[in-house]
Length: 168
Image (tube, rainbow, N blue to C red; front, side, top):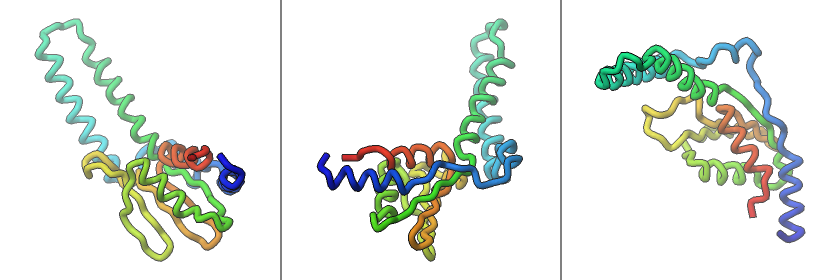
């Protein structure tokens, strides 16, 4: 990497804040962020439990701990709720074209441009509607010299780390 690229990456690293959680602390104990997310998760979980129960019943072995399997499925699927807990970080532009940098990295993360309205850019996962929630969208607010990037915690963590890495 040449000196120009090193200098640019150093400016980018210094312009990105840590990830923080903007909501009140008690909101993070309620894993569901909306009614539609709760309904979607519950319906999907119940459908999976019915399928698991049916498949286990085909075996005919009474020693299979069905309740343990179903409990494990419920706990395991709750990680998808944790992945989209709302988080945020701020980026100072500093004349580096940070919006373009962020958009390129979002495209590499398989996000697509959904809406652009008055300095607000919304990106969503490139998945079928059944497999994604609006809580997983990433919203970029352009406030002049700063960009506020908000969305699901895991996606923001990946995006932020890609901004901090040498990309060349």
